[in-house]
Length: 452
Image 1 (tube, rainbow, N blue to C red):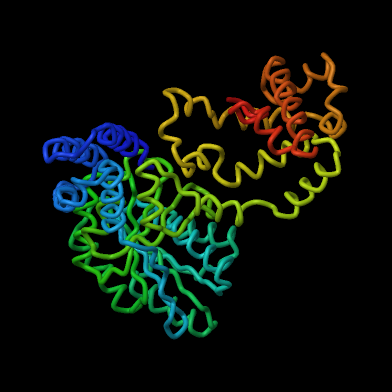
Image 2 (cartoon, helix red, strand yellow; image 1 turned 135 degrees about the vertical axis):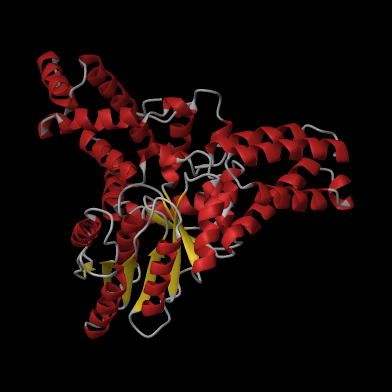
């Protein structure tokens, strides 16, 4: 998300940093480019106007104009205004109510409410150790109730039965009564969506809200909705006392306008963002980290948190000890590393959070091909355990068998073995005295064993 906006803003600020001093004219020229970049990212026009006005007022301040590094000061101002626009700081869920704490999800059809219900339930179960139940009040979309049941079963959540013949209000009443009797900590309610905002839909969701009296009413919005975000957010904000939003499908949108629009329109914070299709891919929304990514400064805090949460610490420690003892790094170890990287959203997901990645030479980022990593994994999986431990035994006939088993070519197998040998050499340097310095020199700016 934000790739296009980040690229354009980086170019604007690069030009401004090249100026000896800032004038009202070059500030106006720069902000005109920022304005166009925001509009092309599908940020709503009223939001863009306010944003540019605030930045311009601060940029024309005497301290900025006379600064020795005016371009850097202007970037700082834009960063602060972006953080302000998206809500200043992460606001967690408020679950401090008499159990069950009820969370109602509302939004248009296709926004990702059902999947978000499962993601949120899993997060609260695993991270906060809550006893969570989910229920669907969507009696209109075919198989909506069955979808939530399947997701609940797959993610260790309790599914409260509902039926398409029931009224949504009656489902809500029965679910709340059941959750109270069974002493659930949290009840997540998935409501029906529509393809567009209509009066009947709003009346129904109001009735469900009145029955549940939820402590959290979250507006679920598709990040790819574009300019329609304004209309949808306004309608739900008028109908319901929203407490926040969940921004979905952020992995599929390079623009990100909804993230910069919904907080301004609703006045409520974005609390979570869906970062992928898996039910583990729901992340707290941190405005300051997102602003940093937009401006090409990366998001190291989120990357560190992901490493903490999604890597197997025991395997990592075991590998580190093995290397220090001078034992050989095998293809099985390499496969483990690829798996761990995949758990973190792949190399593309990691690069998105690294500082300065949007300033790579043209085409460099494109070479980091997720399919190549999948290909590497398939090739290793097609080997016997003996071949993974002792790759030197892999001769021509074995290569032919491995290529056929992985759906690749013999040259792909050769390429993998060559990259792996390079990585083995680096690991040996790492285990020797002064190994880290040797390893960095040997890499020559290129990651060992990687297909780019």
